[in-house]
Length: 56
Image 1: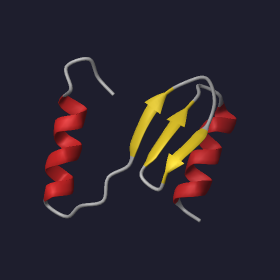
Image 2 (image 1 turned 90 degrees about the horizontal axis):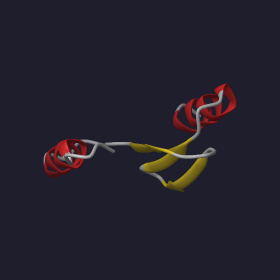
Image 3 (image 1 turned 120 degrees about the vertical axis):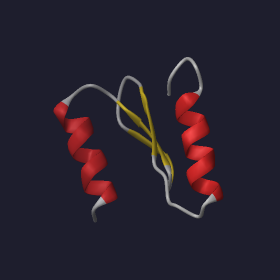
Image 4 (image 1 turned 90 degrees about the vertical axis):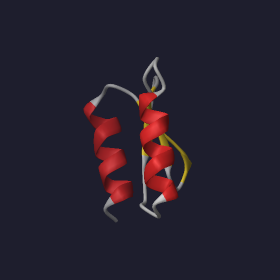
């Protein structure tokens, strides 16, 4: 997320309103943490894996 915590505030606000959120943080490779949280590397394969997971 961001250094100021703005992203976390937005996620919390949307969650409080019953909206589904997906948290994606930068890392070395693709990893699914849970249904709503992912680590994403910079490769095209990582982006493809995320989109396949979210839209399948």
